Structure formats: C-alpha cells, structure tokens
Amino acid sequence: MRNEPVRRLSLRGADVVLMAHHPRWKGVGLGHNTMLVVECDGPLESDRIERAWDRFLDVCPWPAARLRRPFPWGKLYWAAGPRPSLARPPLRRATVASREAFQRELEIELNAALEPRREAPVRVLIVDDESTRATPSSALVLTWFHPLMDARGGENLLTHLSELDRDVDATPWGDHPPGFVSDPDRRSLLERSRIARSSLEYLRSLAPVPPVSAGGTPRPPGRACFRCRSFVAPDAVEERATREICWRVALVGKAMSELGRRRDHGDVPCLLPISVDVRSKGEVGATFGNNLAFHFARFRSSETADVPALARALRRQMADAIRDGQIEASQVALQFLPYRPLSRMLQVLPWTTGGELFSFNCADLADWPPALGECFGRKVLNAYHIPVVPPRPGIGVFFNRCAGHNNLVVSWIEGVASDAEAARIIEVIREGMGWTETAWSA
Image (cartoon, rainbow, N blue to C red):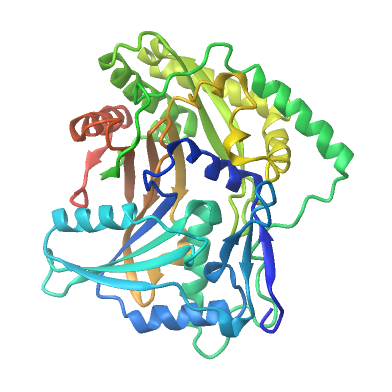
C-alpha cells in the first residue's frame, strides 16, 4: 500500500447510521466522538507512540484520511493520498493533580468535536496524573470519529500500535499485514435485496407505539457528560448469569424506567438496539468500520419491576431473532443505506418520523484484549470506553471489564439528566449486579 495513489474506503451502513443521528441539531457543535481511556502504571513516552503511528501509516492510511462525498447524495468515503502526504494523528499532553481534574480533562477531550473533512479522524491525549503516586501514572486517551470504527476497532487499532512499538526491528506481520477492513459481501445483489426487504418489513412491525426517549421532551442538546465507576464482582456462581447482555439490559431498563417515572412518562414502550459484532469469533477481525448488526429489544416500563422475568423475556426475543435470521438480515440491510440522504435515513420506519428513535443506548463491550495487558511499555491498570451518545435518546449505559474491574459508564447529553440522576442509574445497576466499588472510581 505504500506507493499506491489516492485510495477510498467507503463507509459501511452502520457508519452512516451513526452520522444520521445528528442532522436535526445543526449548529450545536455536538460531535461523534468516542474515547478509549487506558490507565497505565507509569508515565508514557510520547516518542514511542509517535513512532508506532508512523510505522502503522506505512501500511494503513485510514487514521490519517479525510471524509469525502462526491455529491449531496453520493457515497461517503475516507480518502487518503500516498504515504508522504499522510501526517500522524495529533498528540497532546496534559498534567492533572487530582481525580477531579482528570475527569474535567476527559470531558474537555470528549467535547472537542472532530471535523473529519478537515482533520484526521483520530487523535491522542496523554494525561499524567500526579495525584496518587510519587511517580506519576499516565492515561492514554484515544479519541476517534465514531463512524470511522466501533469500540472493538479502537481496541484493535491500539493493539496494532502496541505491537509495532514492541517489535522495533521488524513489523509483527512480516510482508502480510492483517486485513484492516472487512471483506465485501459476495452474495448477489438480488439475494441481498431480498434479505434487506425482509429486514425492513420486520423493523416496521417492531414498534406499533413509538418509544419515548428516557431524556424526555426533545430540546437542543448541550455538551456531552459522563460518569465512570469501577466495581468488583462477587465470586458467587450466579454471577455468570448476570454477565449476559439480557440481564444487563433488564437492569438498565429498570434504572431508565425510574428516570422516566420522575418525568411522568407512564408505562411507555421501550425499544433499544443491541449491537452484535459480526467479526468471526476468535479472530482479531477488521479494525475500521462499524462491523455491527443489530437486534432490537422490546419491553414496557412496568416489566422492569421483575428483572429476572424481563431478562428471560429478552433472552427469548434474541433467540427468536437468531432463529429467524433477523440479526443477519439487519447486517445485510445496512449495506443499502450509504446512498440514502442522511437527513431522511431515520424516517423510513413509522416509529421514527416524530424524532424518537429508541429509548436509550446500552452496550456491553466485553473483556479488554489480553494482548493489551501492557501498552507502550506500561502495565494497563484499567481501560474503558466513553462514547458521545446521540441527541435522541440522549443517554446510554456501557459496560466493560479490564484487569479485574467491572467498568460502568453512563454517558448523557446535558439537559437530559443531572449528575444526581446519573449517580442513581449507576447505583441501581450496581445493586442489581451485586458489585462493590473499587478505588478507581472518580
């Protein structure tokens, strides 16, 4: 790839869906940022990170590409020139003296929107924390334009950079770098069209009564906010059941329904997308693009009072969707979205025409990759993802696990919830999971 002319990487369907969440809020400056925060046991060296970037750009240009579209309804794509024209993503360094200052620094970074038409869709922040040790620790913060890649893609990218840092004399892949993007679907257009039509018919039947966003009445969104807490799970055998996504969605639904009752929503229908990673299990898979399909969970607020029963019902829904091929069908249907105008993309379903998309966001980002137990010569103490959620529904809950920590992030848009309400959501989930808090929580 080193001497090739200008290249293009078309956005995938899930990528453009993410971009379509924001057009109705023009001029508010809300970005599509996603952050990966990696807390390490000592200071990180900027030079090592920059060298790894330079070596990565020798084989893959997309972190230095720009977003382009040939005409208003044309296909969005990432454009990258030959290697000499590619500059590494920017790196900034900051020093803080308390966990409160660390939180503020992360919020500043989260709210500094990326403009991928004019700048690289990825940037790096190193935060040196002098509050806890004689020797400062460092946090590596990777921020990217969410339509560039999903959470696992961010972990893959950091894995590639870390491998390049460790193998200073040769590339870890030899002459055969991994496939950084997914292979195209080889099925015929006719076959894919048939599957996509069945998926659209299914989606149109999901919400005869439109869902209500947990945040309540639509308003121009403010800045992005978040709170992160880290917990230790009990050793009891039953903890295995609570690790499945259906139990966690049920718990988050309980917390969000409590928020809705404070807003007098009543017994409203709840609808939320559960993302399904379509990479092959046991493989690193593609780095760039949101390699996702979706399952939509449905329930009413009143059903969240009995979390075990709701978890069983959600499990049956997911089993039915897998049996009927609906999750695979949603993946195929997404392939037909890149040519559709963003402003009209979310109006193809009857329950989205009024502006309501779904009730809240929720995702379990699973276990931190074992290959990233160390990063740029430092032991990883904890790592978690912080996304900016769409203005509607304006709030989401995200789980992951790293180095014995069960991390819980609540992300919301200012005006949708308060700090106290976010803290209450965390407490409802913590209690339902049976977790105890660790010293890492801010």
